[in-house]
Length: 111
Image (cartoon, rainbow, N blue to C red):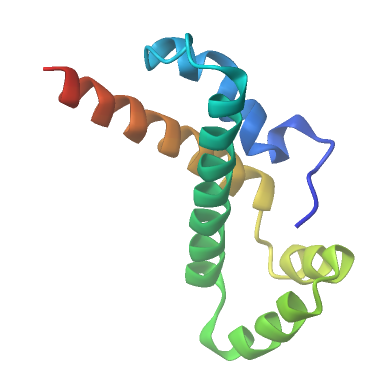
């Protein structure tokens, strides 16, 4: 999926904010922060795809896979809208969950 202009569709915007500061990683070089952020975004996208898969009815999964394989964002969005799947909401939820889980894991490691 192409990076969206809507900030609510951009996991980077939702995670990055104060993540590095809260994680105690604000001193990392920018290059390292970008590597971490790339992995976090990939994780969020995978989580969103899993959630979408869970929400799609079994009889619609084959059609969705074909649309997804097409790689055409417009077709994917039309399919998801028709199935009443709010991708923006899923991105927000999964981005915030990812951030919370990582910060919690880091806090546990520091104990």
